[in-house]
View 1 (cartoon, rainbow, N blue to C red):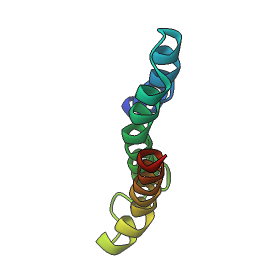
View 2 (cartoon, rainbow, N blue to C red):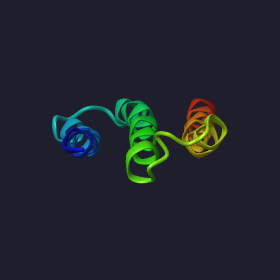
View 3 (cartoon, rainbow, N blue to C red):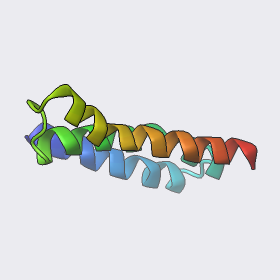
Length: 79
Protein backbone atom coordinates (compact mmCIF):
# COMPACT_ATOMS: atom_id res chain seq x y z
CA UNK A 1 0.00 0.00 0.00
CA UNK A 2 2.92 2.33 0.69
CA UNK A 3 4.10 1.89 -2.89
CA UNK A 4 0.68 3.01 -4.12
CA UNK A 5 0.81 6.16 -1.97
CA UNK A 6 4.31 6.96 -3.18
CA UNK A 7 3.33 6.41 -6.81
CA UNK A 8 0.28 8.64 -6.43
CA UNK A 9 2.39 11.35 -4.83
CA UNK A 10 4.97 11.08 -7.60
CA UNK A 11 2.23 11.35 -10.24
CA UNK A 12 0.93 14.45 -8.50
CA UNK A 13 4.34 16.06 -8.06
CA UNK A 14 5.72 15.35 -11.53
CA UNK A 15 3.85 18.12 -13.39
CA UNK A 16 4.59 20.61 -10.60
CA UNK A 17 8.29 19.83 -10.71
CA UNK A 18 8.26 19.96 -14.52
CA UNK A 19 6.53 23.35 -14.40
CA UNK A 20 9.08 24.70 -11.92
CA UNK A 21 11.83 23.51 -14.26
CA UNK A 22 10.35 25.76 -16.93
CA UNK A 23 8.87 23.24 -19.33
CA UNK A 24 6.42 24.46 -21.93
CA UNK A 25 2.69 24.25 -21.15
CA UNK A 26 2.12 21.89 -24.08
CA UNK A 27 4.61 19.42 -22.65
CA UNK A 28 2.95 19.69 -19.25
CA UNK A 29 -0.43 18.86 -20.76
CA UNK A 30 0.92 15.78 -22.52
CA UNK A 31 2.73 14.78 -19.33
CA UNK A 32 -0.47 15.01 -17.32
CA UNK A 33 -2.51 12.77 -19.64
CA UNK A 34 -0.74 9.46 -18.91
CA UNK A 35 -0.42 10.37 -15.24
CA UNK A 36 -4.20 10.72 -15.02
CA UNK A 37 -4.62 7.20 -16.37
CA UNK A 38 -2.03 5.78 -13.95
CA UNK A 39 -3.70 7.51 -11.01
CA UNK A 40 -7.16 6.33 -12.06
CA UNK A 41 -6.03 2.70 -12.32
CA UNK A 42 -4.36 2.85 -8.91
CA UNK A 43 -7.32 4.54 -7.26
CA UNK A 44 -9.83 2.08 -8.67
CA UNK A 45 -7.76 -0.99 -7.88
CA UNK A 46 -6.51 -0.11 -4.43
CA UNK A 47 -8.74 2.49 -2.81
CA UNK A 48 -12.03 1.38 -4.32
CA UNK A 49 -10.89 -2.22 -3.73
CA UNK A 50 -11.89 -3.42 -7.20
CA UNK A 51 -8.71 -5.38 -7.78
CA UNK A 52 -10.61 -8.66 -7.56
CA UNK A 53 -13.91 -7.40 -8.99
CA UNK A 54 -15.34 -8.89 -12.19
CA UNK A 55 -13.60 -7.69 -15.34
CA UNK A 56 -16.61 -5.73 -16.58
CA UNK A 57 -16.86 -3.66 -13.42
CA UNK A 58 -13.15 -2.88 -13.42
CA UNK A 59 -13.26 -1.96 -17.09
CA UNK A 60 -16.23 0.34 -16.57
CA UNK A 61 -14.70 2.06 -13.56
CA UNK A 62 -11.26 2.48 -15.11
CA UNK A 63 -12.48 3.18 -18.62
CA UNK A 64 -13.77 6.62 -17.76
CA UNK A 65 -10.20 7.91 -17.39
CA UNK A 66 -9.21 6.66 -20.82
CA UNK A 67 -12.30 8.22 -22.38
CA UNK A 68 -11.77 11.55 -20.63
CA UNK A 69 -8.08 11.66 -21.56
CA UNK A 70 -8.85 10.73 -25.17
CA UNK A 71 -11.48 13.45 -25.46
CA UNK A 72 -9.23 16.07 -23.87
CA UNK A 73 -6.30 15.04 -26.06
CA UNK A 74 -8.51 15.32 -29.13
CA UNK A 75 -9.66 18.78 -28.09
CA UNK A 76 -6.06 19.78 -27.38
CA UNK A 77 -4.93 18.58 -30.81
CA UNK A 78 -7.75 20.41 -32.59
CA UNK A 79 -7.09 23.74 -30.89
